[in-house]
Image (tube, rainbow, N blue to C red):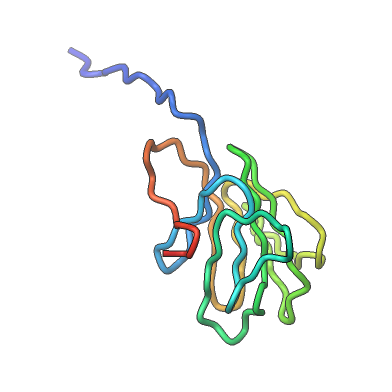
Length: 133
């Protein structure tokens, strides 16, 4: 007898999340800023500020924007730049201030940190609070 079971799919909508190599996960809707001491510009709505203790990272190095299952990143004219690695292994530097779409399976190199782009359907997955904790 075949022991195959049908499992109902999740009703949770898929969400893009950025998984950092130190275990932190960013998945808040809206804009998150990453850097040594990230700060929003006047009247810029920001969901999360994420601090990276890395001298190769600019004060406000990168912006992540998440809308459900879609995400974009913007290098904020960082000194050392941001490297995007596609799921095919192709590498390219982000153009400063140009919003770039990212897809699950891609990775971003920000200083010594790596952020993996993943699609998550798990209900209640933990994400960072506004202050990055």
